[in-house]
Image (tube, rainbow over all chains, first blue to last red; front, side):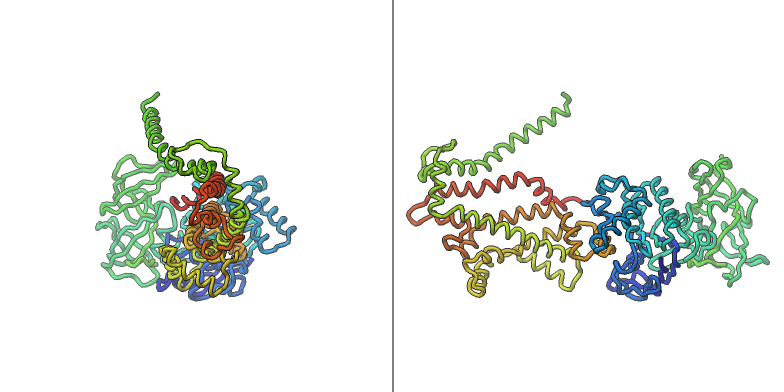
Length: 359
Length: 278
């Protein structure tokens, strides 16, 4: 087990900088998830930690030792690839033992490690099969098994579940979580799926355009996002954003008007400097923070376009009188039967025009 | 029968009616070679077209053996072709691997030069190559001169480069992370995965060496060390041409290749078609 530290890590391809000085500390035994949209640099960061990409600037340390110029095999890491990267011409047993055999590991120890990994992942009966004879989930297990036999200090996962169907993804998510508890090894996991990040991570690193936007525990990011991007990225359905205008101050904070009417005003307490009266702001409201009329700060009239029933919960896809799309979460039993309905805002977040959180 | 299966049958009949004559046209020279190999020397000039074999094959072969030591020539051809194929496949696949997997200064220029050599007619290379091998290295009439000069096959390099480029890079990265040395990744991961391409390339290279006439004729024309095609060529004299012997020898050179091709055609087609679709 080992801690991983990234200090001002930069990656350039030619003149094009894609990671702009990332600073991330992963504690010993922690499960950290890098999450962000395509092209945000999360896989590149992981590959730099693995040693598969050169580092253009900064330092990466694993277990306190700077590994910038250390070969991948000598970094004490094991990696699970999105494509599984199983050798198609080898059996499961040969896939698991290949690296150890090729590096001259003693035969007895190789057999012990392969047996242990196959037992942990419950793939003992698959050992004689080739990858093409395995299902997606089984292949994924073998890929993880190949990482386990290395007995690494750090596991690196590069979107390992993205090729699986929804049901299997949930199942494998639980298995990876269980594996982390069982092995207690540091794990760094890359995904673009915020649900995976929320359910697996001890801490999440949200990335955008090669910048670290925020690092925190899943619920901290959900409840206390630093900016509009994180607020929108974490949570499903995503946070609603409604344009507003600062109309004044009172003893509780600044007053923001949403739809040009007094009853659409919300009051937001602020510790920092308040924006000037008349300036534009963005109000973020999570779907579950819409209440019935009169229950919250402001009342907003919306027209419902589509209702999605998910059993206990329903999502109302609606539009404000200003034409802004919003998603409202309701108990299935409380779905209104009219197309026009007034909802209140029980909790909201305020962002300035640049998307930075006002608090 | 439904109209759909009737249409399918109709298409199949039409296709066969079109392709069967083409196949017969292609097979006709081969069949005539077989017929001529069983006829006496002057049989090739018989006024009518003979379509059935005669009984002179053994006699023709004996004459061929007496005049050219043909069995020995075939032995030399086999040893040259096998050695050439093995070494050339190894060399071209290593070059293809380097071009597919590594980024290095001048890589584009190297690929362009290799591509350029494909467009050069062999006649342009032949004389300088002969001067270099015979005069500078003094290797005329040696076995090495038959095998080594044509070893580097540009088409083979590009063929293998394409094959390796299409393999998922994750496979090799996974092996790297596991600490497997680069040459072992090449030998134990890349080459087994390139098997269909290797098989196709091996057949192409073997055939090229087996059928090669001009270079062996120039560099190694001493009796006793000639390859089989060159030995056959010696039967064309100024005053007499031993057609029976030539046809018997051609039969013996062609038949094994046909058998090999039929046996390996699945690999051959798979290798050629690899990369056609993702």
